[in-house]
Image (cartoon, rainbow, N blue to C red; front, side):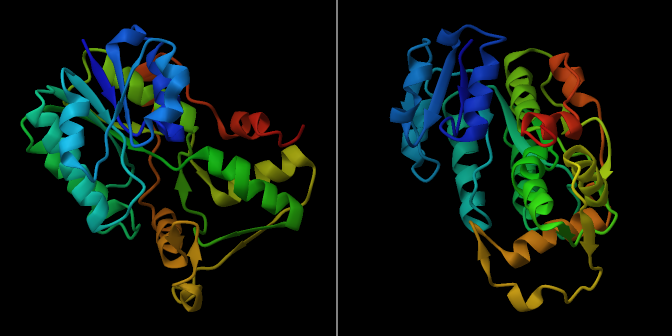
Length: 289
């Protein structure tokens, strides 16, 4: 059985590639990337590394050739480009003879969810429901790693944790747990047709996350939030990395409004291991050390 992992050069793809070796032999894995030259460590382990670009459908047909299953990791683009990329990948998988696909979606799939990422995932999930292949949907919660490696350290330094999510909750999850769950779901039988909520073990608000960071670091942190719909609109077009401030605010408003308040034990159901807690992710990032 040959299994494709797309986006294998990205952080998630690398974690999934490492995790899948816990389940299947290296020679059964095909890693697909726009930058295959960066995957020599996996090639040396016996994995088949191929070039494939979601913007070049013909390259995907070659990259997917001979595979039976595929883990399609959602791209980082947003909007029309991402939808076209996902359409290209799903169509290429079908034309290549792949029988089963797993896809990394998002928690909070709902037509009224204000988060900017949700429409693309709803679109892709609908494609998968009608593609003729067996599909496994993995709806990922927000990454605990972002809190541990970026937001919490800044809050510890400044003494403030600024959020527009109020006291809304989400089941923050370690990226490693997401990648392992995705790898196990596509490599093992019994997951076709399933929809999983890939979350951490508990629901927490950003206020809770700030309090935990304060407790572990021994530094006071004030939780600063606003429920004002207009707050931040004057900076809506400001770019922070690949996203605008409006994009980021929409995701925090989704948390505030309850769309992200989902917690499951599906990580353990799929992998046999309990998902890491936020405390454990903080500790691994050096908070409180």
